[in-house]
Amino acid sequence: MSTAVGSLTMSSAPSVVAMGGVSLEKRETVLCKIIGCGMNQFRTADGLCRKCHQPLPPSDEELLPPRESLAEQPDRGKPIDVDPLIIGMPRAVKKLREVRHLSQRQLATQLATQRTWVSKVENGVTFPTAKSLERLADGLQVSVFDLVSLAAAPPREFAQALENILILEEILLSLRRASTEDRAFFYEYAESLCLRRAEQA
Image (cartoon, one colour):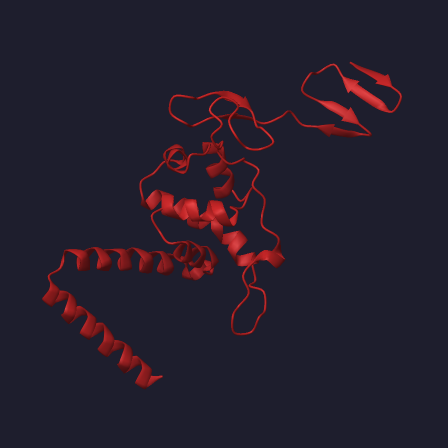
């Protein structure tokens, strides 16, 4: 049931108000993650909790940054093609989460956000902003560079790109545990391989 007053039409439902044919959605509710607070509330304009005045978890509806704000290639100055990145990010996030044996809820807890946000990223509904991309990479235990590179990899090269990341992690872990002599031998061997490839190129 609705009541018309001039050009304003109000629905009997308390969560929706229609004006000029445009309905305003129900305000987003958010749970404060600060220990000792935990207040469930409407999202505030300044993004701070009404009770403890600490930052609230990021909104589910994080928007894709504008194309012109993305980094430019230093050599040619042309914008990076973001289409492969947009398409590949859901697959990269989901696969890395599974490799780390994390559920969506566990990853969301690490990021101090809601499980639905992780689900939306993995389903391509939303794309992380630059700030949330850093936090997402930390939660998945990779660098931002590795996460973006994996997301931008063509489908046929995705498995190999993921394997390269995991192999490099094992090498770095082994180097941390190796003796000084073993590290020196590895670095010399790696340097000789690089020089050999440079000569063949």
